[in-house]
Length: 246
Length: 303
Image (cartoon, rainbow over all chains, first blue to last red):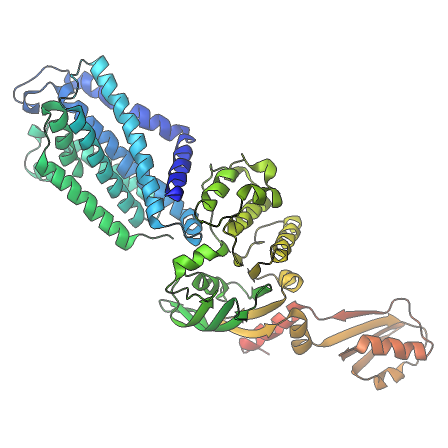
């Protein structure tokens, strides 16, 4: 436990010492919010967004998107980089348990995702008159649920992909795919045919619905929560089986 | 007392490539034991198997009475390790690394004391990336000692260091032993092995070709001594009768006597007896390098 706490604290400090990644984590959600709101406005249209105003609809989705960016981009790049440079080798030789390496990674990504999400939510509410979450408690639960799933997914990618470069490419690809298909880009109603199938394949789709149910309706989307949990558990199992220290 | 490390018939292959064919040796408590051999001889694979970082394909391994194959985690908590090709995150600070590694073990040394001892006191807030090669090496040694290990594995710790930093690293190794810690040193530098090791195993192509103290290896495998001096006295044929002398060659005033054993002392006394008292009498002994080249050439089937 002491080791996990120390590792997480060191990892958090290391993260904060990389100015670019800090800026990325804080600014990315704002860019998305500002640009997309300028494009879509916030006038409800009964044909799209289940009748919600676009910014209302997208705010919880962007939270999912931001959490996803930390999960599938930052974590794999960091883990793969540490493997490539021999940091993981060094940890293993000193008997650092896998749980400490992975747990610290998850805790730090949770903290970063939390700060990004709060910045995003506050800006949306103050700047675009988005109504507050219908159920703050369920929103927090949905956030944790989603963040843990993306952390597990990111750790899995970082376990399988050998180099930081490859992890960067794979992570960005997956993230853009999710941006386009996962309910945080084009309105879900416009994704039909093959695109509709792809939408079902990306984890963000379920994360978005879970977050939107909590924010917009104050409800808990059981089916989506189940799928999110299943993805997280599956990714964790793959990690346990296939994690490579070097 | 049981040896700290015991290796019997270790074998390890990576796919079709056999890295370790058959390696056996033991390391006793408190000694500096060397694994000396050319790159690719199987030294690193051997110490990685000993730390349970790789699974051996065959043979029996014991480190501190534990089996690295099945008790690797427990073992790694008790040994110190300085690995080839390992690093720390660029932006981690020296004190943070020490504090973190100390938190991994319940019986950790006080890392502030280690930082002082290994000359890093002024560098506590420096980032890993800003350290020189020698400072990194000192940090790695401090990290290897933070769990108060009974034995440390040092793999090629002076590779890539400049000559001055190498000397400092040698002092570090001796300082580790001085605190009672057994050291297993992997190196391909002959001078390093000869200077530091109490005993060593010469490894080539996955096999141990010789084991012993540097001096014993030299006596056994390259016993020849060359004694040189100069004299104006024309007749030095009496030297042929000195025990151990094999050849005597003369070029002008320069005389070169080759032989084995205590030939230097015997030649000196014979010269004095014949009233020859050269001021430049000196002997050249073989070094570990000569032994090494001879043994590895033999194992490669060369003359």
